[in-house]
Length: 333
Ligand code: PEP
Ligand code: MN
Picture 1: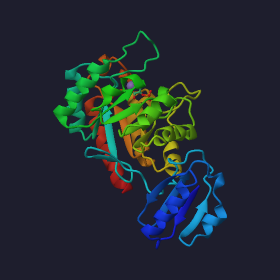
Picture 2: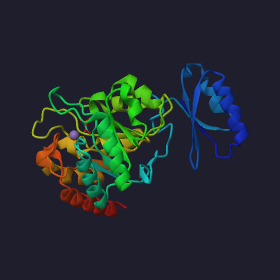
Picture 3: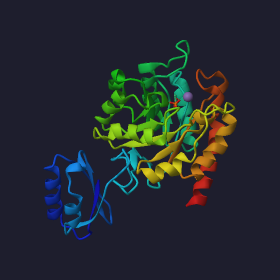
Picture 4: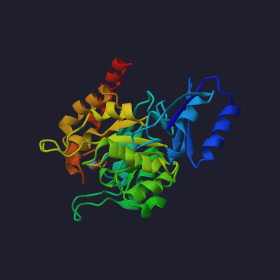
């Protein structure tokens, strides 16, 4: 349930109302916009007398929120959430380019790629240290050593870093990581989501291979319900019967999510297509669709990559994609 307060409401009246609502065992999420204040009531709202609440002098409107996601819902928080990572910002008109290899392979490799993507305009460096691979015999990532190397690359370039967590047990290793990624395969690992909700780290939550947008938002809700509102959603393609591409990029997810939620939305055209040749056009389409950022795999030698070489751009290709992104953003502005 939400209650929109009248503009002229004083702090004292607001506090009075909050105390009353909380006395009914509800959590109240307050969203103070420039124009209006929205109170999001969370919990068992069946005990709230809607008529009584609507009749209060300071209350403009009261509405039941039918969707099961509450804190992620745009009606609870009409303004866009902006996630800040160092100097980078994502959401509310701020756009970020995240680039780097699928996996960290050596200190030299990650520093070289970091320098190249930074020079081409990337704001955040990606690199997997823990890799969720379909085969247990495939390269599983350098794990804690990989995180150490990412931190070296951060030191060398000043770029904030994002890397994927696979289970709660390794959370301590992520202390200096700027954004924790929850991969597609873990989107519904509810224990992990709840633990991440207890941290104050920005979380990039990827859509699962076969998950609906409502399920993605319910997973965001798991994190938010524990107190962490710093969430970036990521569309990375879903499973369909089409096999030419690795997944099918659901670009309509971008405007749909913008309608449903205030959380920023980025697109990963690399995992969505699985082919480097398709990444530039799908990146352009994602930007045109209103994405708040893109996440692209870049490798200094894609043919020798230990993971996802076929979908990785060279630094030169990324530089040209980056210029194209700037041009499209200028047209949209
Ligand atoms: C990744 O970003 O390296 C990754 C494994 O992505 P996804 O979870 O989307 O497959
Ligand atoms: Mn990958």
